[in-house]
Image (cartoon, rainbow, N blue to C red; front, side, top):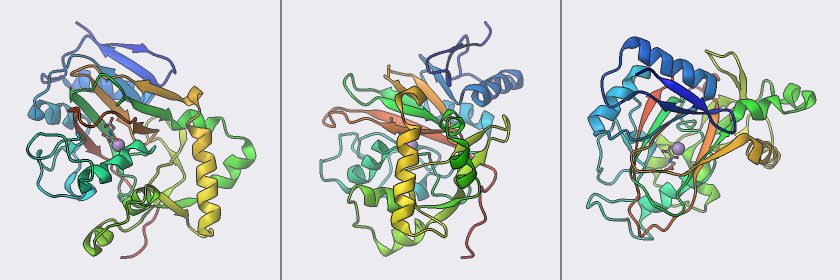
Length: 292
Ligand code: OGA
Ligand code: MN
């Protein structure tokens, strides 16, 4: 069998068939999938019955894995540091209580974002495996930030070309009124700097590097920065630039954080939704960082 990638609508989504990615890949297969990522930015695979170790092994075809422990508030983990627990479950495998602090923190995933944009070296790919999915709600939506950039007028492109934003988990959580953050968390989630326009290393395409983690633009008054970022974000998530994924059990969705934003939609959280994410680390900064 050979790999086929079918283009869905809108065109930045590819549906992959003809390969079992729970098994070891040849380097040619890995290269073909990476080229697919560079072209599309989101790839969907069905019926991939991963164990955690198989998911990690597949993900490592695309680079080293991010340590996910520093990207969340930790109070006992279901999964090890190579996997982000994107489920709504506690260590007892039961849905978290409505007022559980971890659940309230995770609600930030309902805001459009790019994974790890709050890290000085932000993520390359994310790979999300749907182990137990819900049948109503809980879609994951994606926005093509290259198409959103291309559709800007020339004046706006010139204005944003060299802008640098500050990103922090504290900003995105603050948008939802989640402000009970310890001094230790505040220190580990200190803002980092990212360019607002980034160039994809493989395709050479420019994209808008937006994320709910943005709190300001360097050199701008904060309210003006936030109003502008909100305006650009509204532009970027127009239906013509977005896709909504309805999960089937054992779907794997893989996206390029350098070229897309995503969010999860609301669902009945008394139901089990067990989603597990591996994250391929990026290899470069987008902007110079402040000295510590
Ligand atoms: C993620 C995320 C979306 C979802 O895994 O990075 O934002 O559908 N999750 O749970
Ligand atoms: Mn995410």
